Image (cartoon, rainbow, N blue to C red; front, top):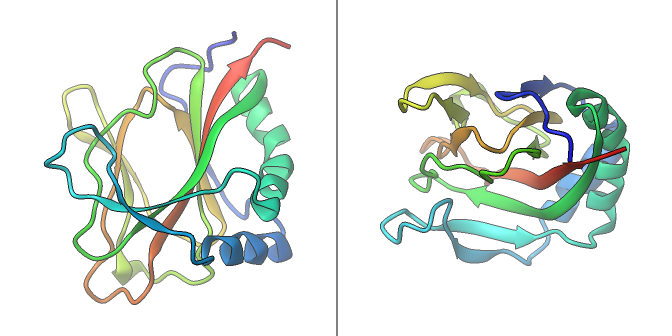
Length: 178
């Protein structure tokens, strides 16, 4: 296994062509959401929405499209461990957590929204080992973030003014040798 550089955090803009972006958004709007997901095992954490995206054609096409660029950034071949969508509404933000603690694991988050206004908030925040915010990424249509899965992060809830579900498409990945 190849370990990507520690602290990897890459912003990806205009990740896929418009038609594929729309197809991924449509797939995320399917009525297959379930409620009760938590970003940590802490039962006091507020639950939010989740949808398994395994085998969803548009999502598989999305990853096939973005995979070469992500592999260049991590310096190795990527294998998907899990792919799913998270959904947050007002008041249902996540808590700081790690996606994986093993070296060689990365996460790709993608914002499939077709429209997102800055006043709707919902940023993804990244934290230092001391728990201080070190980076924040605003939701924007067709934007992605590739990061070291060992980085603490949290998805913030959208504002009360937001009429949309804040959706992130998440790919939990492992870097493999050649």
